[in-house]
Length: 215
Image 1: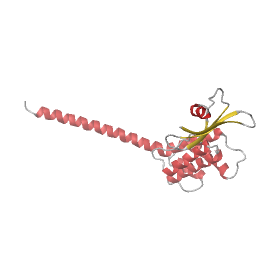
Image 2: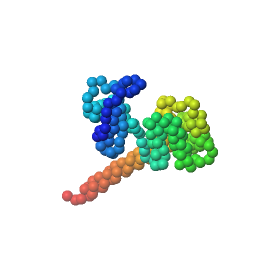
Image 3: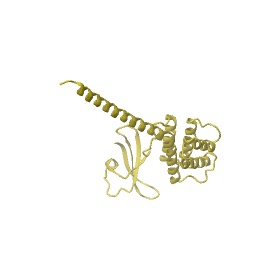
Image 4: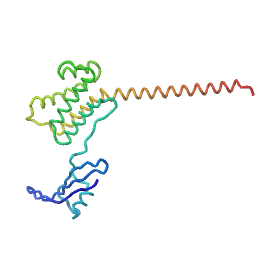
């Protein structure tokens, strides 16, 4: 991290001392801003305090990017955007994106008929998701429908958003990641079995050749 600018200010309403500043990442060179309240015994040099403080509130926050074996890139991008919205304190947008991910997941598996409620049930009927994952997907749908249809008087809480994103991950895990990893594990197991059998056959052939060779 390279500190670009930092200074101490006083918050007008609370008269609290605030350290704020900007810095660039030494790896990606992108800029971020951060602040912290009430620097007790801090360094008089705000840049030094900013550089070594462990209590800074960073913006944007570290954002989880969704990726995994088998997840189509457009769906992974939408899921990552859901996490990005949550990190940037946009809970309604996060829930809407999670709903979008569920519907896009259904469509990617050829489930295109009817509204999302029917698509989710069809995924379960086809064995793409289990019964409990179906219920999780419906929770995402219900929360997302509130946002989509303007029922926004009660904003989703931080816990609501965390649960919705966790349920979204379950859908992705079950539909995309799980089957691919199972296939990969099976392939490795069968490959290892074949290699063992080939090694045994080669060893047996060598022993037979040795036995047939006259002294």
